[in-house]
Image 1 (cartoon, one colour):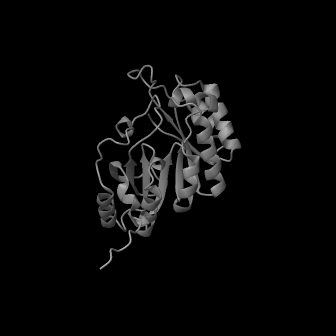
Image 2 (cartoon, rainbow, N blue to C red):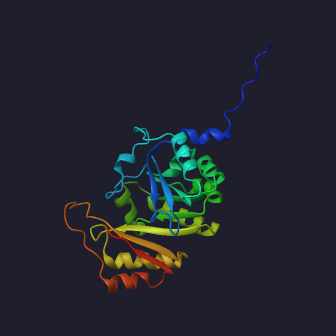
Length: 240
């Protein structure tokens, strides 16, 4: 009998290659308005000075779960969870993300994505599979290179912002800030630029000074927080 011709690997298997560094079974804060699980994808090309998930930076590092593990878990939570968020690291680094999102939707879950926007062209391939995006905006454009360690990173993030806004997918921009990164006047300027770009929901999270990691984290007073929030329909000030 002649050999059968080779066939391409089915697209439905793409998610099996997803490198997963962690899984949070339940969160009420990572997907606004929904009870969700969080899948942490490994790998990130940026090296932000305040990164709190450094164990996920190496895409080739040890994984904690397989995609089959995640699917098995999600099957057991149907009817109990509303959604699934893909976080990281940087989820759009991985080619299996679109298939994973499609599989999650097929199970009846809403889908969310945490991204820093470093791959604008890849965002276009997943927007149709998403119900919500949490986009990290690190700071004013001229501060990006110092924060991420990668030249030109700011242009990519703001390009991604424009693409998500144009898509109509629900969006929350999120900024992690400390006065050691840039001053309060620049933070206020960032708020205005985000509002001018059409952003309606912004979350601000203080972080520890990367130059003094053991020092106390200063908070924003109510008056300053009110100034930052006045142009947003939804503004959240999270604790460090």
